Image (cartoon, rainbow, N blue to C red; front, side, top):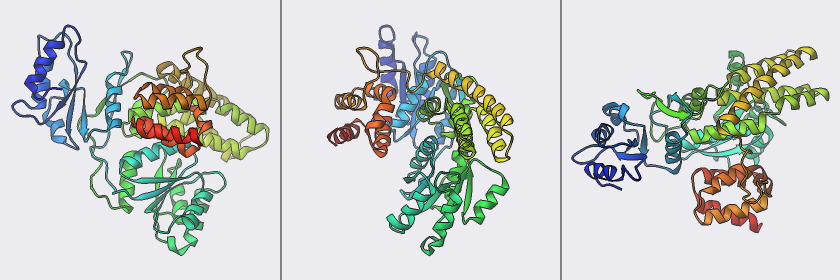
Amino acid sequence: MAASAQESFARLREADRNDPYRVVFMDWKMPDVDGGEAAERIQNEHLLTNKPAIVMVTAFGASDARNMTNNQSLAGFLDKPVTHSSLSDTLMMLFSGKDSSVVRVRTTKNIPDFGGVTILLVEDNEINQQIAQELLEAANIKVKLATNGRKAVEMITVHDPPDTYALILMDLQMPEMDGREATRRIREDQRFAKLPIVAMTAHAMMEERNQCLAAGMNGHIAKPVDPNYLYQTLSQFLKAVVVTTPEQLTTPLQIDLPAIDGIDTATGLQRTAGNLTLYLSLLQQFTAKQSDVAQRIIKVLNADNYDSACTLAHTLKGVAGNIGAIDVQQAASELESAFRHGSHLAELMELVAKTEKALQLVTGAIVKSIGSATSKHFDATNGNAVSGKEALERLLLLFQTGNVSACELFTSEQDNIRTFLHESQFHTLAKNIADFDFINAALLCQQALAE
């Protein structure tokens, strides 16, 4: 801690030889010497052998600091109020490793605040759920989830009070009941005649938009979701407490991220509004859940289940687009189109092989660059994975002692932990860990173990 710029200069010089500071979080507004001038003086200080990374801490949305400060002397900006998530993202950006490439990401200056309204997200894919939920919660929206159209209809028309939801985000292609049929059934109930329903689909063609409107929907958002367009669309139906326009930063945010062959990481990071923690998690989930999709497609084809094979290709196309895996997205799109047009089996198998080749290249590059969600194990005795119950008991101990090794343990054993928890408990625990909220994480573990 230093209470002024002058005090920070003295501390940096004192620590330079033996234990130099690696990062400085610099307040922008200070007496005598402001943060911008202080940052420049530190970077130009000839007595310092080790120059720290400097992050400017500003009032939320203080664009003046970005315009008035010499960006060359700064490693980034951090808005007040500082949160666990924003601080974690910043540190990951600064210390992601030497073998990295600089990715420039354009993101919004401010995210609209919709005042805590509740919306229903109807989506069957876990990665799409996670992205949408993060973007919505960042805009102060409470999210309830339905994994298919049938569940959505039941929640809206039967289980929840009529005024629960301010809007519905409706995926189109889902098992049990698709989005169009779910919308028609909701509209049959006059209580929900004016409830905004916005489609979310991987198809952006005008024909698709018209079909959504004909089914009773009010709008259309193409996947992969663009955060700016999502907020713009929501603003048409929801009143924002803080009204902002999704302007782009004058100087794009720079993030250090390992180069990954076959992935446009800049595009992938844009899909998560620059949330590096979320993006790295999505990359690891992609390798864990999509690497064998070609084999699964062949298996259902051998059972003459062409609809399921088409759905698998459709899902792969969407999640590949989310992370910026352009070649995989294109190959999966061609395969899905071939299914829909009734192509011969020989042509389908050729496209499956093409998709598998692109997929293997990308998943291999992800594992090489950042590892996989299942590549590390926490068992200190022999390196073997432990049971879900044992992992949860270890997590509880780490949470109670404030040990951040809990994050590594959760990452390495999440598949086992998932089998021991209810799905809602698992997602809550994952969010607690992402927010470094170890108190509530410990309470959840205690409850689950007691049950």
